[in-house]
Image 1 (cartoon, helix red, strand yellow):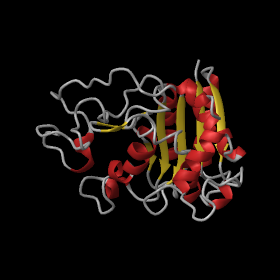
Image 2 (cartoon, helix red, strand yellow):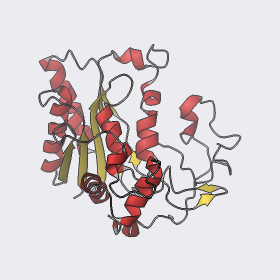
Image 3 (cartoon, rainbow, N blue to C red):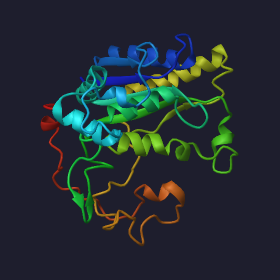
Image 4 (tube, rainbow, N blue to C red):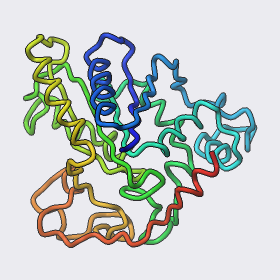
Length: 281
């Protein structure tokens, strides 16, 4: 069986988001998986990335957060709450984010979790940077080999988030999270589980949603991931720009999904030694 980390971002325990989180725990546990929940509001998670994260500073005159996070990671002086979340990520075989869509993104507390936990040397700045290989990222990295999934509750109607919908396509709205925060450090990303008109849920609709969600949880480790192109698999040039002839008729972010007929990707041996990374925290 596998280990699953749920990072939960909703302040109300009786919310639909929290109900889905609870159903995920129940379903995954019944399958024999080990489940950990980081309930960010219940934890009173510090969402602000600031100087308070670095009691021991590399540069006391001017705060450069990325540099200080890298120094703290390398020297073992990270805040205890950050270390605990990094350890959970290394422990996990799958990571599930549960949150409501607020102003076209996740709640600030979840963004703050990413900003503080994804330290330089842990989630980014990993591997060789130069020429055609600009780091072990987008399909490689510290968290490679894990699966990830977004569970998002949305107040609007589904047509609002369609190709011609007024809010824009949901896959483009979730791009910074799915591609930028989950795929970037190496995780394979499953299709999201969106619930539309989540603020007006009838009992009958909840039963439908719950049944569909249980199926997604049961298939978490067998469903096919979103076919994002890997950065170092051969589809991008030395400036990490998609090579001519790739992308087909797609536009926008969808050109970064592998299309039928595209050449096979070849990552070769990963440059990331997860065991070495784990030894720092």
